[in-house]
Image 1 (cartoon, rainbow, N blue to C red):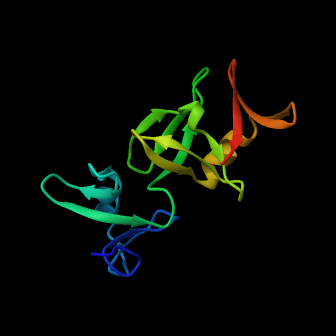
Image 2: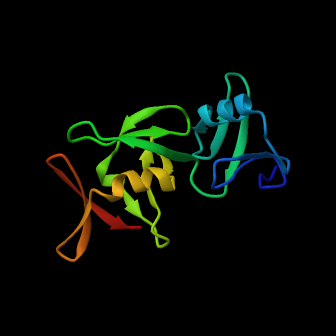
Length: 145
């Protein structure tokens, strides 16, 4: 079965879900879908709620960084799947449209929301012809994707 915006479960870039082309409007169901994103053994993206496994397609990356906390030298990511974890600095990239992304929750990609990106913007400086994110005593390079 082909999964796209009109067939099956589809996750838009803004974090809204579609099922067979119709928006999932129930907040608890949408939250459950976000919490249930995983990788299948073949590397494809699925939603799994125990015994049920359904393939999904994403307009962009499967996770979103909703906001960040900056305790000490760390960047804590608050993700759309309701998990919180430290940023993996080596995975931080900036796309051609200036949106930030990273790896989170194992090896799932996460795109920073505008709000999360703005939280970090005040900690970005230009250095040696590139940009870096300064958090506490740490300097993290912002690499182009």
